[in-house]
Image (tube, rainbow, N blue to C red; front, side, top):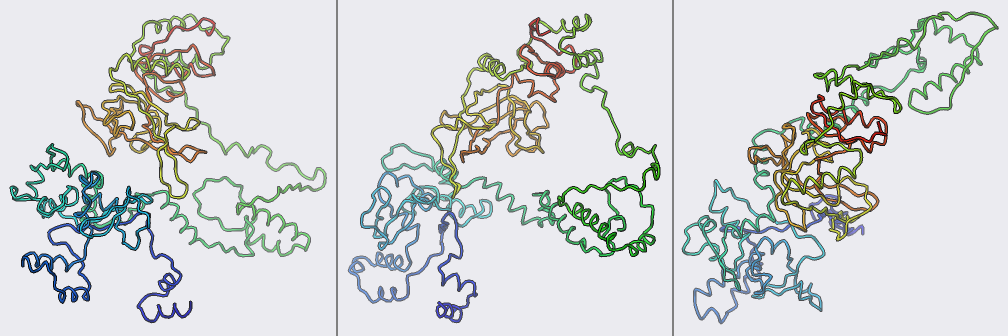
Amino acid sequence: MKKVGTSYLHHREISAQEAVFRVTGLRLRECSRKVEFIPVGENPCRMSVPLKDLEKQQNCKSSKRKRHNSDSEDEDENSTWMNNIVDRYKGRPHIDIFIKLCLARFTSEYSVILESQLPQKINKDTTFKLDGSLGYIRKRTRTSPAVIKYPRFSPENSPEKYYQSILQLYLPYRYDEQLKPLLFQTYENFFTCGRVKFQGDNTLSSVKEIVIKNMSDFVKNGHDLEEAEKQFHEKDPKEDAWCELCPEAEVNRRECIDEGKVSSVIEEDLSIPDLNEKSSSSVGTNLLSVSLTKNEIIPRLRSLNVKQRRILYKVRDWCIQKANGKTPEPLHLFITGGAGTDDPSNPSNQLWNGLFEIAELDEIMRQREDGMFAELLNRLRVKQKNESLSSSDKETLQHCFGDSPDEALHIYSTNAEVDTFNKEMIMKQCTESKLIEAQDFQKDKTSGKLTLKKVHCLKSDVCLPISILLAEGARVMLIKNEDTADGLVNGVMGTVISIKDFSPNSLPSTIYVHFDNERVGRNAKVQKLISGKHCVGLKPSSEDIPLSNCVRKQFPLKLAWACTIHKVQGLTVEECVVDLNKCFTYGQAYVALSRVTSKSGLHIESIEDEKN
């Protein structure tokens, strides 16, 4: 081992660390996915055949050269270069799975294998032989598809190179002439107006649609990333960018630096708290001042005998442990002199009196425009169950009974009442309701890969529901904090305007919601103006399912024509309908009735007499 390591170290210009890595067989780098480079463009870089092979080809006389000089020249030119992934793509088998396969997907999903790597028994479903003695390929089944890299060109600065590259990557072809037929002068013209027909399919397909469809699987938010990269290069990176990305971590880091600068060395003679110099702390404390000065106390400490010093330093050690955050055993001291030696020096000074201030909020803000109604609600708040309402209060509340509008927010005590009313309203108000099923994934403990489960996790303590019945025009509420800074928090209400890409077996791509508060979602990534209304695009949210190592994906929404009393705490509305028949705890009636700003917006369902 020592000799091998010495050879690496002295015969090659590598570091000692790399020599150790190579001797022990450790990997210098490791990725979860393979990265494959695709040479595209007019004249991509290629590797030549080794010089020895070129010399053999030059000395060898082939019978094919005698037929046509031109063919021999082409063969010489092709034999000069080693086969790359593009050559192997052109030589893919003529079977159905490869007819509409583009170069990008071919490189990502298939790997090239050598003849020496071929097993004795070939799996014909995953391993295929290429035409023209180009070797074999095998579908990546044990690993994820590879990440593709390729030269990028600007559509503004080099339009021909750009359209040529995307046609090579995302349009299925076997010959270079198929990328720009003779009828088209430029690659851009063929991309925009061209149509192709595949083997076994008599219909003509748009080149643009094929390229965009295949490109969407590999390029995600390409324009946004390019714009971000452009802005990064045009503007110098901010020195405090990390503070904006992760302010809490930056605060903790700076606090640690400040603590490191403070000297923790305490002078031995001044380790008694009362004798230390006062620090300029901003913490408000109210301590009795020491009656003796430092110069007066030090001579007295020096005059203590051994037993007195032991007692003093016993108390001092306990105080230091307590000040350092430790939990020593409680210390109880009782100090007394002779009986009746002296009276308390300041019996009228109650020490706790100056430490507290009391501030009571007694002004009601929600019903400030309707003072009579606010006073009535306050009387209901303090009313006992067996107490009777006054005749004037009963008469006031009687005006709130009667027919109630369906569009107003309905407030119930239990979830069962809320679900029943919401289902009735969506069937009554909306024409095409859609049942959106959640997707539960099993999470691999080692790789973190998510696998879709066929059956939902029934016993799950998560806020995302298994299914949601939604429709365009339905009233909904957000049930999970998505972006607290942008107002997308638990409890905000709105109306569903559009549901995009709905299918029974998958989640919609986006649900557009017009929130009641126009300030909600102003900084959201997905925004759209639909029928003159500002809509926020919501994407599926993820939540871990405890005790099962699963993840649920679902939209954090629920129907909100009706809500429970618990859910509307803190909410203020102009009009609502309240049902108090199933109240089961103190304060529910007051919370429900006090959501409106005035008595005119309150509607009460009929109440059973015995509930009073």
